[in-house]
Image (cartoon, rainbow, N blue to C red; front, side, top):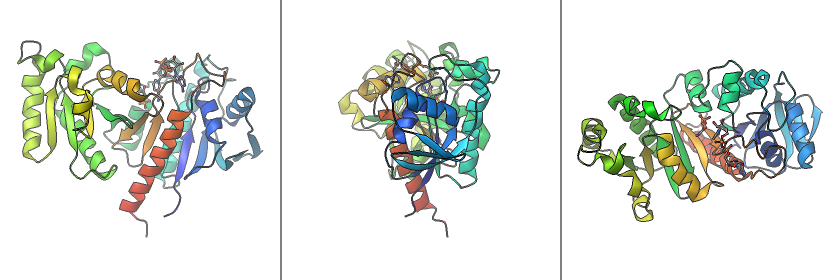
Length: 329
Ligand SMILES: NC(=O)C1=CN([C@@H]2O[C@H](COP(=O)(O)OP(=O)(O)OC[C@H]3O[C@@H](n4cnc5c(N)ncnc54)[C@H](O)[C@@H]3O)[C@@H](O)[C@H]2O)C=CC1
Ligand SMILES: NCC(=O)COP(=O)(O)O
């Protein structure tokens, strides 16, 4: 099978993304990487952490890992580690969209993204709640965020909204869409014939028969019963406090959490380094690091590249799976 070509996007220029990408370019991969970002930011990051990186031509980077195609998208302001500049918001977003376009055009078979600082993008005058939503809008698809590490897969029914708004956002339509996208991705992208999905309740003790909240009785239970009737293997709504016990986790291929901080702290505690963030439902694979811009570490060389490396490996596998499913003539 042909080697996949993946777009690699460092993300926020003042964060740890650029230096983690420099680290990725120090070694060979099972995919060809094309970098979408500001070459000067990458060269400065390499210099700062003492790793070799050169730009032998306007559209090439060279490092011990090989020669890498470069799509240079300069920022408007000089990037300072740990100090995001609102003037760089436009080029940060442009790099993500250029990579998405390369995937849509078939030039790349997937994209791997570094962390983006939501407030820095908003301060630059661009409405943005995350790259998952940005790419969903760009591709015209409904998308579900799923984080995964070797211990578990956790998908989110709601993501970057205030906690106060979560209960109202959990409509039957949103939950059904989330479950169908998750089920299809587990089957098609992860090769699980009959995925077993655990669905968490929203309220303590999954609502305690309506005494601690009604979302389980009014929304979740009827929906799960209907979808089970179609053959989907769904368990729940489960009390979230015990759903992650190892004996329970072993029974499921994925968990659908109702909101960001219901699922992600458990997953990150169980393996921050190996976790990746996968956008389910896009026309091409997109995998991101599980961590943020870590401004406290930017420029120090101390940021751990494991999640970025795991993201490149995961995206390579997903691209290969899709290529095997839809072979080009
Ligand atoms: N994939 C993405 O684009 C993500 C972006 N974010 C964004 O990043 C920004 C900062 O978010 P925070 O909540 O501060 O989370 P953060 O993940 O940037 O930092 C939290 C803690 O983890 C540490 N950490 C993060 N990455 C690390 C690494 N590679 N190696 C070692 N330690 C690391 C940091 O030093 C800090 O102590 C926010 O704007 C957030 O929205 C957050 C998570 C994912
Ligand atoms: N908590 C995940 C996160 O902040 C990254 O989201 P996205 O940018 O991948 O949508």
